Amino acid sequence: MIATPVISPTCHVLAQSPSIGQRLDALIAQNIEPTWLIIGITAQVLIAACFISHLIASTRRGWFILPPVIVHTCLLATLVLLAYAGHRGDLVFFTGQFLNILICIRLEFYIHGRHQKAAKEEAHKFPNVAPDSAERHKAADHDHG
Image 1 (cartoon, rainbow, N blue to C red):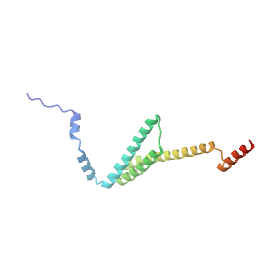
Image 2 (cartoon, one colour; image 1 turned 90 degrees about the vertical axis):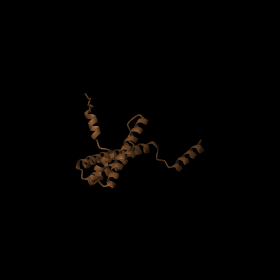
Image 3 (cartoon, rainbow, N blue to C red; image 1 turned 30 degrees about the horizontal axis):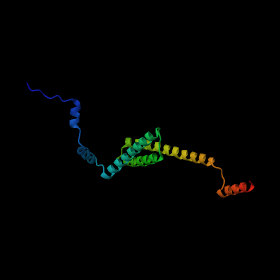
């Protein structure tokens, strides 16, 4: 009696999964222009880089932080992906990127408001005295002393 090999469903699925070359051929068959494909992939890489740098910065500081450069870069990359989704005519992808843009814009307003608040607090720490008048007061106190 000859033993037949047992193939699990997982092995069967893996054996049928297309290679990277086959996937690229499928994308080309969908008439996706290589330029737009590169633009879309670049935008995705930018967003991934933002999340990675955010993770590193938060880990180093020991608390959740959101540096403004990450928000600016994510907004730019999301706008590019929105254009890509519009070019492809993918309503679901377009809607998702549009919602991401709204979130990024809200974060931009938050950052701008934080910087304005910090500037106001910093302005109240120092008296409004011109440098030359401070020197005159110092000299007058020294003369009277």
